[in-house]
Length: 247
Image 1 (cartoon, rainbow, N blue to C red):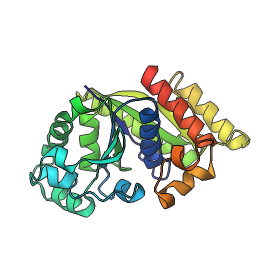
Image 2 (cartoon, one colour):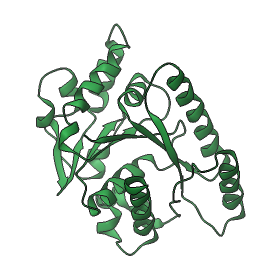
Image 3 (tube, rainbow, N blue to C red):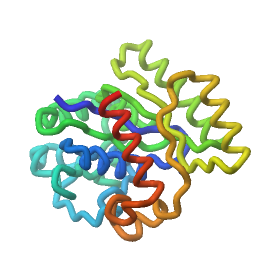
């Protein structure tokens, strides 16, 4: 069965989608079968990867297609289930009982669990019903954060929320914190990384250093391994994938 990992932070702009795409691609490089699922109601992973899905998570949830029909192949061993965007948002907010949403998403992912080694969930910032559903469906959570005050504030809020959900019976575990956009030559970055390591000892995963090549990826519609295979970003995401896959 797949390991389902939610990639999340209550602050936007910290590299969640970048991490989903390139962690997924790195796991693919290691030989794993990977599915990316866009659970952001403003999600654009399909645009990022130049995919043209004929169906989305929205279509699966409303029952107009079966789950496998909505999955598109991005690369060998790397697939995508796109969000559905505003259609999905309208449907979620029109549901009379928001408590239905976690069960809907869990059922969708359960039907795919035997087809993949990893399922990576690209979560929206904040706490909309679909984000809560992602936490219900996930086995693990990783939290990308910039090594700056705003990103870390979002990370702390996210951890507090996850702690509350665990107390309420959610089964996911926090696998770790991913420092992103990190520049070891910047004193402020080193200070905040040290603060994270002191506050959450043992929880910090390999950092993703600042790399302009990563910022170019949505424009070119490629993973970092295709666009800049010898870059810092490629090396860092491969190190992160190895840590997550093998411990």
